[in-house]
Amino acid sequence: MKQVLMVAYYFPPIAATGAMRPLNFCRHLPSYGWMPSVLATGHPSALPPQASDVDLLQRVPAEIEVIRVQHGNPLGRLLAYRDRLKRMLNRKASEFSLHSAGMDGIASSCRADQRESAFATARRFVFDAWLNFPDPQCRWYGLAVRAMVARSADKRPDAIWATGGPWTSLLVGKRLAQQWAVPFVADFRDPWVGGHEFFSSALLHRRAAQLERSVCEAASRVILNTEELRVRFCEQYPQWQTKFVVITNGYAQEMALHPAIDDAIANPPSALEFSHFGTVYGNRSPLALFQAVQELMREGVLDRTRLTLRFIGAWDVDDPTCDQLAKSLEEHGVLQRVPPIPHQACLKEMAKSDVLLLLQPDYPLQVPAKIYEYVTAGRPLFVLGGEGATANLVHRHQLGRCCPNRVSEVKRTLMELMGDRTSLMPPSPADTEQFNYAVLSKRLADLLDNTVQEKIR
Image 1 (cartoon, rainbow, N blue to C red):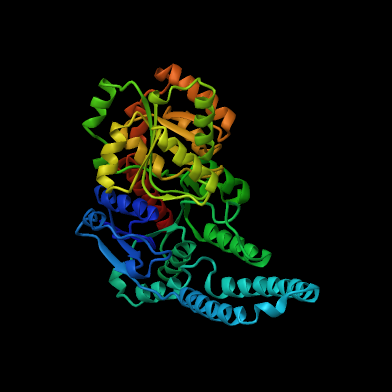
Image 2: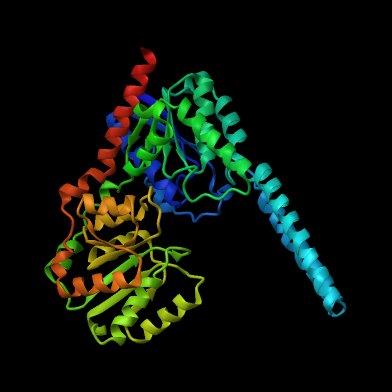
């Protein structure tokens, strides 16, 4: 059986979203003639800190070797020291605060703010270039490469597959493939540059673009997880168009069937329930949905007993308006916020939902991994936002409805769905089977076979 080294910074028991793709490939690749080994970091050193899930670890086949390489976090230590120093200086500064009144004090304060702003910009550049580039996991690179190079020659794989982000994983895979002269397959789960990344200087942005280009040049194949991202890479690097292929994210085969699905279809409740699973945070905000529901109730066109919004998972919303609306809708009995529940319980609850709600910001090249978990439940999706790759996927495979994340559009779409629930039908198994990781792993195995054959020729 051929050997493939899978470089995946996140891997169980680390319960990061990025760990699911390599885990599921590992479970199925042996069926197609490829035995994986995995190079990952250890849970204690994972950045950012991640939850640990022993159940995920139990899903890793016993015959698969996992090499875990820990690394330090000097940036974290510096930031902790900075915070302690800042608290100390603030205490000292408060002793002299009474002497800073008056116009001279204000002018001096403005000049100090300008100096501080310039200093902060320079400081961030130094920190990013030294400790945070190409990503916070950069300290893993040298340790991971040395750990693998030190292994005996008979451990050399037939091919290397590396997935990013973090982008350090791709650089580790590229370096090891060069060391061992074996084919290298780069797997992009997100765009490296040209997406929603933020660099502290144009210099670092250019350097990141150079690194992305070097990975594409070195790779025998470059896997993108959406068609839209593949098109972007083809436009960016037309000389390597034949390298770029799509293998989407997917769902684990054992999660695909839930008995509760049939019951949910056979006994539809009188109220329409939208359920969201996972953390609500940042720009994944339900603000437009809450505003739309509140306005419809005020206008008297929405009976609050016919609509339920359930949010199962952590609530990390830093928006007073959204929080206030949430409390108001809870008081009216429309909104339910439920604390996080175990993963298997989540899947069962998904299967019992009328409609699965997805909050997707404007990431035109990306599809959230959560959508594939939703697919396992066999329930229709209602996507707020997601213009681009997410909306295209939902329309292409008839997974549900998409709605622009604007209050007027949400109001109109909600009233349509309340009036005609048949427009939200469960997706067909024929449309979702292609996202089964057993099917996706066959595509990856075929790709690995081709790269090895090309190397031989």
